[in-house]
Each structure stands twice: as structure tokens, then as C-alpha cells.
Amino acid sequence: MANIDIGQLASEITKAVLEYTEDVSEAIDKRVDEVAKEVCDEAAREAPKRTGDYAKSFKVTKQDSGGVSRRYVWNKKHSRRVHLLEFGHAKRNGGRVQGRPHLRPAYDRFAAKLPDEIARIIRNGG
Image (cartoon, rainbow, N blue to C red):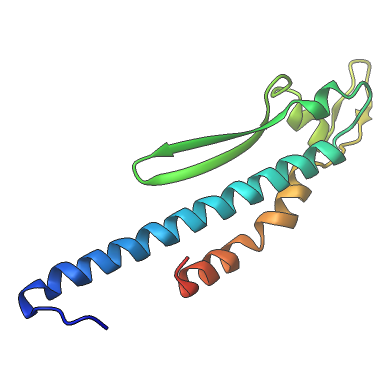
């Protein structure tokens, strides 16, 4: 431990806290990106594949605003079709098409562990 003048103690503490905060926020962002990628890949694997075009167009979008960073997993080309395939829909001449859940199960599988992993990152300091 280095000898620190009492006048510089506050600035050294502030510097240490800022380093800790940066390390933790970088580690959290990295883990959230990894989980978003896993959800995207799983949704693409489990998606209905009549031609394969629908499954290939799942993307992760990062949105940062006001200190809040979010990741959205969505279908870039067929965004209007996702809820119809996920939950089912009525047919044109009567009857129903059964839903094929693929996005929600992927989210539930990977994102459920994320709060515990974030708490571990905070405890370990990044």
C-alpha cells in the first residue's frame, strides 16, 4: 500500500471507485451482449423453417439512452410475422394455425440467469 497524503485521500478514493464502476459496467455490458446473442441464436434455431428466410433474419439491436443500455432481439425482415408464428393465428377460411413458440422460450432460457450473473459480477468487481 502506498503512502497517501491525507489531502489526496478523497481523490484517491474517488479514483478507485471510478475504476471499479468502469470495470463492473464493462463486464455487465459484455455479459448482456453475450446473453442477447445466445437468445438470438436460440430463437433462430427454434424458429419455423419453411424456407429458412425467417430464421436467418433475427438480429440484436443495442440501444443506449440516459445511462440505460438495452438489447432487443427482433426479426429485421419479418417483424410483423413474429407474434403470428409465436402465438398462432386465425386462418382466412376459418380454423386456427397453432403457435410455434420460439422467441419467448429462448428468452426464458437464457435471460432468467442474467440477474444472478450481474450480481456476481458486481460482487467480484468486474
